Image (cartoon, rainbow, N blue to C red; front, side):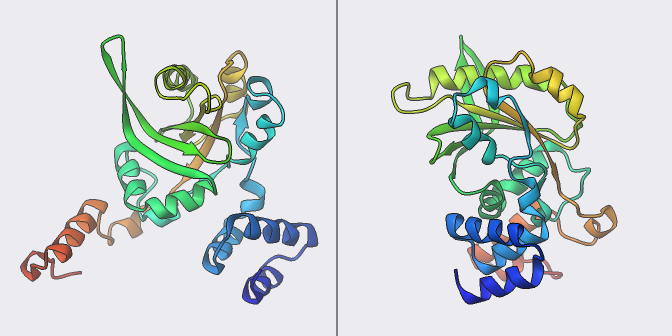
Length: 245
């Protein structure tokens, strides 16, 4: 890895096993120096593989181990510039506007397929929050985004989506079983354990944080305002650009 990457790891990480972890992940993921610094600041070595899952029961080995290692807990969305009280649609839109940062936080191998992805089942329409494809596991990954604490009923809804994607979207001869992830604001371990205990489709539960204090959010432009400013800049009309930006 580049010398400056080595300097970052030596300066910011004190114990040898953790340094070796960041070296390996830098090589595997091709992290730039700024991404490496961000991963160290957010303690990625503690978060990777920390999600609660049923992979050991729902997936064969070694796929279960590989699947566990692609999930984190918690996910850090500090780059969004929104508060913890933002609703699900606001968070989802913000993630799509910062898709590159979102993909970096998800980790290597995630390819974006769509948001509010439409499924038609027996004449009814259903819309999944986020759909990805993992290029290393060769499977679809469904993410349900919640701005509340984990609730057991989230598992039932996600289980329905996984079954539908397996039948309607997945290539049966090429793709592995679809994996699901509930992303929520907080969770209680025992509640998650009970909710996943008798579920046979592979899924996990993780938390996320946006981490911007409400007081700071009040002085920053909203995602909608930033989008309008960007559109104005692209149109080349200076009269459409707000005086404060």
